[in-house]
Image 1 (tube, rainbow, N blue to C red):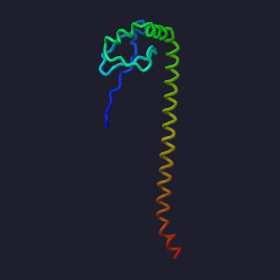
Image 2: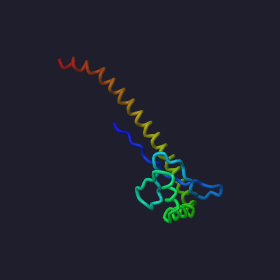
Image 3: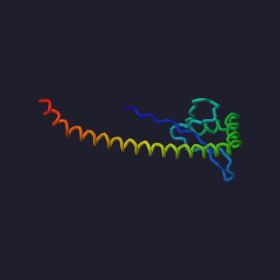
Image 4: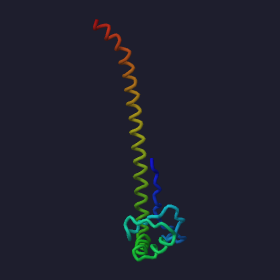
Length: 123
């Protein structure tokens, strides 16, 4: 069984004004940036990632994040509501499943109690 270490995914920090800013974290096992400048590129150390965050594509991505932060907030609220609704549905389904399992267990017991009598009647 082989274990592999996957790189972290970079997320920008938020400053006191609520704007997204670059803040390079400690890089232990590489880091992957979602900005799209180089798909599937893993930056292995601090210096290579520092060069990356100064690229035009990364800076444009950061600007886009800041321009759309209100939309991202609305989207986050919708996802939170969706997750809560899914939790409720899962709880209802688990409750239904539990009731059906109890019914199956009860009927199985009833069936096994009457089965020996049925065998006697066949004689």
